[in-house]
Length: 106
Length: 167
Image 1 (spheres, one colour):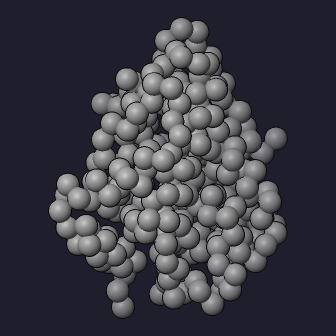
Image 2 (tube, rainbow over the protein chains, first blue to last red; image 1 turned 180 degrees about the vertical axis):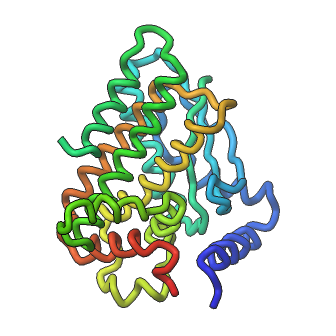
């Protein structure tokens, strides 16, 4: 019987095979993420395809954030909505791997 | 106050205690505490569901059997686009949105806890730490809405059995 890890890896390969060209894959995902409203000074910096801490294939969506434009608590509320929207949109897109959203200083 | 609630309170205190530029140590511990608050909430719920309250100490002993990595893998099964065969008969109505939220936030918080504890190359923003705390609060709130449902019961059982669930 195929293991959970094997199933997820196979689904990852299937999805990535469907998006075979790295440029196309990145461009498709950027298109999916583009409608997400972002706080002022926040922008999508890059996408990183790599394993997560448990060794599972994952996608790290990295946004750069301008600090100081609004109180940290307010900014955090907006960033929480961004994280939720990234997960929702990529799940609806059918991405078979877990997306994580990182925020770095602009 | 339960340990899970205490940890969430502690996370916010750590994230906001510094004036000016916050200490990375405090932000990292805040992110870690936010994760552990949800970790202990779910363990506590699973143990109360599956383990008798007597003899004294049994539930505390059982709580130590949970594995971070296995819990994350279970959450991944509840968050991916397609349910696996072992879950379909048990989740006839699919996955409740609140349960999906809890599972997704658990995955996210655990990854950020790992980065906070081990990746010294990453610089945390205060807003970043507060985002993780906000997500943990959201997970608590979503969990309270569904904790008495059959779907939540299945989720807790899967967390408790971990990798052995799909045998």
